Picture 1 (cartoon, rainbow, N blue to C red):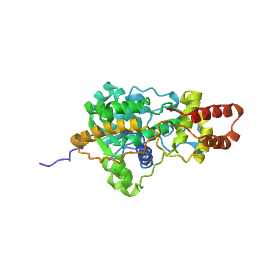
Picture 2: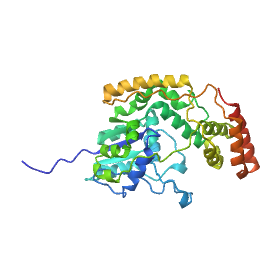
Picture 3: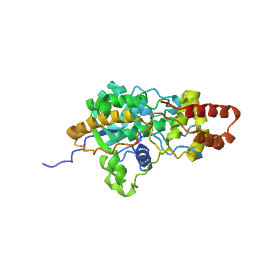
Picture 4: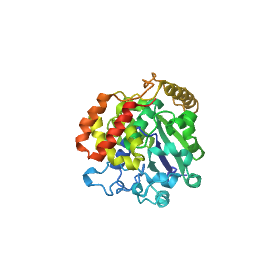
Length: 352
């Protein structure tokens, strides 16, 4: 007997991160090659107005991550200013009703750190109606945590640089495997080695193979970090000091924008900021992670050379502080100069 070919099972692919593993590159590519319609291989729904509100057209961000996915699928409260108008229940139903669309992609890097907050009722419902896959790119954790901490400093959201940094605590407690374990109740965990893909410049090609879109290889450029922030040690220390002076990230952000450019032009310090004891603890956990990855996921990741460690006492030099005053000071009003001076005094004193 003959008949129509079986329709491939539908899949919702949650691209969960990690942060700082090329998620901006992947999201930009998906937006560029998605016309908002349900392609046969994949559909990437997003709100084209997100991040456009109240921002001059010439300054709008190129990336439109699906930030409200956190609000819908996870117990993560998002401010109204960063929510889009996507009705995810309706989007999921639209996908399930479309006869030719096999896969929907939900991409947000912070999902990997929010797995323990997932809304069980949402994922139980999804798992009963379609196949779920959770795709994560893993990165050597010392480099990852250093980069993540630096990004948080740029946003004004970090005051802690060592084990009191919540993500470091969470990683030391259970590693990547425990962080991602909640997903395994509902679907397949698909783990990839980000560092090897970055070295080869083939991150996009790997993602396209994961979504059965090899026909787009020719459109995939060599991966380059699209969300780079200058993260020398002095920059991070000064930004942390600013956060300690001003307070929350919402309050700090306008001031940070005024001084970031001056910092980036002035700072030529090394990246290393985590002390030797913290790095040793992270590497011990990483060894456990790699053993589980090889045994349970067939992913063999070589042990990298030990990263450079930071000193026991972190501080910026008086000369660096003066260069920042000379560079940023003339553009600041008196109140902002007073904030900068106070932060620089803290940064010069330093942190154990």
